[in-house]
Image (cartoon, rainbow, N blue to C red; front, side, top):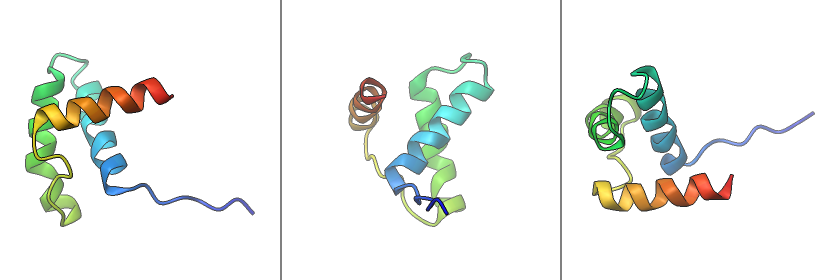
Length: 68
């Protein structure tokens, strides 16, 4: 039986931004998608967004995309 790994808060937040960015057919900038996720994340998950600024998120975003 394969064990399923629970995503970290950071991964969950990145997935949310990716979903918003994709659903809007990339009409929204990454920054706009981030800001929507920042307002949505606490109400849905009960946590503050893990990245306090767009710049810190953008750095982690690009780093995660290079790792794939």
